[in-house]
Image 1 (spheres, rainbow, N blue to C red):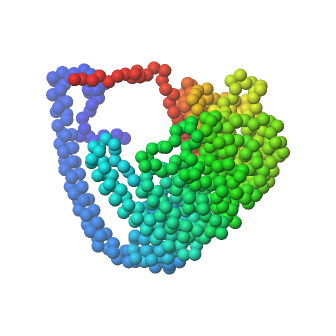
Image 2 (cartoon, one colour):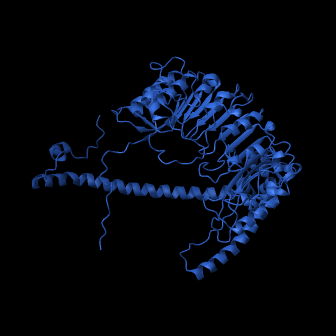
Image 3 (cartoon, one colour):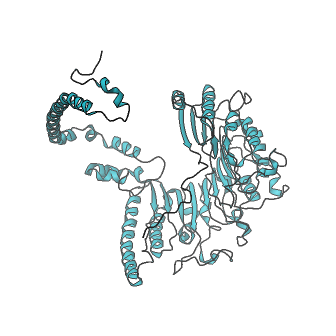
Length: 597
């Protein structure tokens, strides 16, 4: 049955004109205008009716808003949250804190936000000590005006800015002191962060903050310090008896430059060093590492000889060493601070209770001889469950050959070491991790690699050693590393051939049969068809989550690709990010804009 109103004209009479660009004759045009006269009248009547209905709706909506505004105070008084006991309200407040980072001084986030609702909430929040037991403290930044300002005005502007900054810094320190004053006798966890802007005012603010924190040193539990080395003298001088409850320490030198009057770096690369040691505090002899309960230690860019630092390695259950030293081949770096395989082996051999480790070699650290004394005897780590390792350019094969980790379940291995192009068939080249995986691969449940540094043949060998793997992540390194010239050339992308190694018709039956999560965000060149076949095959084997970010290969498109993926999303979490490969011809490449005068 047709739904077209009877008043509408029959357009079939002029259908031949609607499908072409021909102009109608005068007689046809007059007839068409006559046919449109009645429908236009109907449309005007309907428009007037719509305006009336809209006016009525607006009046009803306004009346509803007036009633809602009138009863809003009464509804607020009857709200159930007003009747909650204080102890229940305290638990709700605690759930408002972020579970991923320390609370900040942001007034729009908990816990400061909770003190701005009403008098009762402010009282309950201030009385809930666990709300205030952790804090992130970023030191305020003094922004100096551009040097393009005339000198007279610039000096005057700097003076005003510094005076204003001092007032802000004093208020900032007062807020931090009030925050920490609410913890009572509870433990305190905090992180302090300062970039190096060579500002005496910022350094003074940091020292005031550290003074506030040091008054509560006996309550410290987790400490994270990321500041210029020149500013941590007060922390370096802390004694073990001052921190009886500290369990975690993270030290990060954001700069090793002493403060200068001009704000410039006083030492050039290639000299005797970036800063004379007598001008800077030294972590090397700090007794804070002797804290009686210290079990988690993170060192970033400390540039001190680890083997002589007073650290009780046997007590540690978590260890992070990253960004240690600079390029060892430049000549000015003390070889004692270089983290190479013998140093790592010496440290790990003492960490008998280690459970989690994240270690990175110094960039361009020399590769030791295979018969080095520290790389002969096995390293026993019976409690290690998580290991992340970055080997940079030198092979870590000799370390992994002696590493014994019977409880290892989570492994991340990253490298900047490209395979030898002449070793395309695997001859005279061994992937550093492969011997280790042959021994402990069956026990590993989560593995993170960057396949662009691994030969396709070595990839296959790795997959065959992982029958118990449940989560595989192929992604670029999360370690901070040096960018070497030419690194972007000659990388080995993850391709359809690699995907087929996970599919039953192409691989051995025991290739990751327990895989439940797969992530590929490294350099990859895949086709929609290859991705679709992989998802279908692995879903039958139990894959429940897949994330692929890839550059589309030159392959025929799958017409119903979206529908196929949509059907696979039932019972499976799928995230696909496709990057279009650049065209061979770029019409606007190198085009210069014409300048009209």
